[in-house]
Every structure is written in structure tokens, then in C-alpha cells.
Length: 339
Image (cartoon, rainbow, N blue to C red; front, side, top):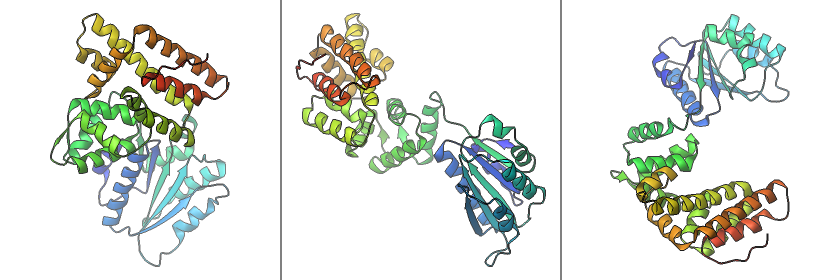
């Protein structure tokens, strides 16, 4: 039986299935489903747990030995088989199917695997689990579903978020649910009992002293030259791809161009910022930055970004040197950058 993670709780009863398969690439949801299942099994008497990590040289016969071994500490046991990205060969498939033909009543087999491809889902062992047990397939939360997911998680911990704060979080976490959970927990500690705004989200990220691409663009817009230099150096030392930082800087420049063009046409700033996904205090910060540059200067910086992209793709010179120059120019330093 295939179910979604949110359906698992309703499928847990006094008589567990002989086997559960949790599969997917979303680490947070996999771990939460695993924890829920372990807690339930422990509550009905499965007090022992043996974990098998499938790695190179793993002997699948041990699964049968583990299932048949008498426990010294408990009558009921969870056998946790962590597949990771390992693919089952014929021998492994045969042994797993042999186990499933006669599963021990005092054992529950919990299999945790990364996302399975179509070949695995058509395999005999997968079909055997589908017939005898429960398969929890964890799918990524799509971008359009992410605001609802964040709001739901916030409500679970008693946190209220303004719409702009939700959108900013969606932008910052980029689909990393584990990062989203950590950010929500941090916001709940900092602003318990308050309605969290986009500015609070930005302050929270700033207070964490993380040096990331968002900090780099913020420092450039606020004309914080020393901070720009520091963040670039940290990103470089940490092995951040120059192309990622370049993408963020180029996006910021395009947003400034959009603000200039929109205001010139009489479009309200809020409308422009909504379209460009700019929230909170950043609206005025970006408007002020847009007023500092002529359209020609912004277009020139965008052209330099294109040149830097060519440099990165062609492995020509030091892309971080070029990127640093563009960033400092965005921060307000007039530079004569060589092409």
C-alpha cells in the first residue's frame, strides 16, 4: 500500500504491518516519518531496534540471521535497513523477498531509502513490499505549495507570520525544508507571541552572522563596503561556486532596472516589489539604490555580469576578482573594470 507522509499516522494501529518502506529525497519528512513510526512501534512493545547500513560489502544474508536471532532484551524488535542510494542486485532482491514470504511476527522491518527510480519501482522486491506492507513515498514540496507548508508548520508551533514574511522565507530556504524548520524554530524563540514580519525574518538571518549570497547582495545595496569584502572572502574560502554569487548579484541588478522602469511608467512601488519578490524594508532600500544609478550604469553592470558568466564557464582567470569588482560597483564604488 502506497501512502503519503501525512497519512501515516492514521495507518498506525495495534497490529503493525510486517514491513514499511520510506523513500524520497526530502530529509526532514523522511526523518519525521521514521520518528513517528518508531515511537508508535515502541509504544506497542517493539522496544529493541537493530540498524543495518547497506554499504559496499554488505552481506544480505545477515538480514535473515538478524530476523531469526532470539533477542536477549525484548520479545519484539525493529530491524531498520538503511539503503540510502544503494540499488538491490538479484541476490539482495531474492533475500528480501524470502524474508517477506515468512516475516516474523515479533519483528517489523523498516526500510529507509533515497528516491527510487522507475526500475526499482518495477522490481519484484518493491512489489512484494507494496503487497505486504506500507510504502511512504515522500515527494518534494513544490514552490507553489511551500507558502502553505510554512504557514502550517508555523501554526503547529504557535507562530504567526505575515504574508510577506512567508514569501521571504520561501525565497531564503529555496525548498530546503530542514532549513525552513530551523528558521521557524529560531523565529519562534526570538518573537514568541508576536506576529512575525518580513523585517523580523531579515533581522533573524542577519543576527545569525551567516555569510551567504543574500548577505552579499544586502551588503552591496546598503553600501557596506567592508562587509561586502568580508562576505566575498568567506564565500570564496568555503568553496561557494562563483556562478551562484553571480546569479544573486545579477538578479539584484535586474530588480533595480525593473524598479527604475516601473517607477518611470507610474507603477506603484509595492506592485513592482511584489513582482520582483522584494519584501519589508528592502522595498525602500532597493528604491534608494535604484535612484543612485543611471540606467546606463545599471545596464553596464549587467553586461559585466554576462562577461563574468562567460569567464566562469570558460574557466578564464579568477571569476571572484571580477565578481568582487561588480559587487563593489553595485555598492557605489566607481571602478574601471577591465573587460
